[in-house]
Length: 236
Image (cartoon, rainbow, N blue to C red):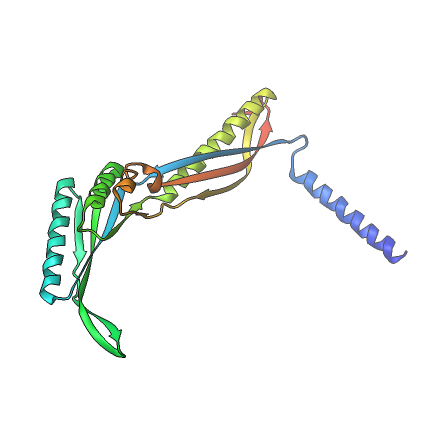
């Protein structure tokens, strides 16, 4: 027997064995149905942490501290008016500022930068705080960081995708005068987008703050499910 014919014989025997194993593992006449389902879900942030920076510069050391106190008082008054949920800050250190001139380092003044955090409850409250900050001359920069549970959005989307697949499968099985049997296989895949910090420093931008678009997670889930089809009379 030639080398080629031996190889062909081995291949034929292998395919025959594989076919025999597949037949033995499945009941004669078994029927299966594969259905896909998909869904999306959106979760909007209900908590926000707004980070605020206060910066002052002056040639006079004592003037820098007075200016920072004025900015602190303005920020506290602002948050009282809008009823901030909670707030705090990291105390600033006085820094000397220099410049190089004629190959010499010369002190030109002093500066202080202080970081504050403000907590807001809900989209509307967050928008009110951001709008107030946009109007304030005491605030130098700020950003709003939403807190969202991305996994919750994905779990919600996945459950809905499974329900979608099952509804389709039940409709198909009913059309074929059959019932759904045990699930044989499930595959799932999905994606979700994370919210980004919302940064701005103008009243025009602040008008956008009430919209939840910048503070939400959108998740998409897709599943492929294989069911065995059975006679309805065989169902318990």
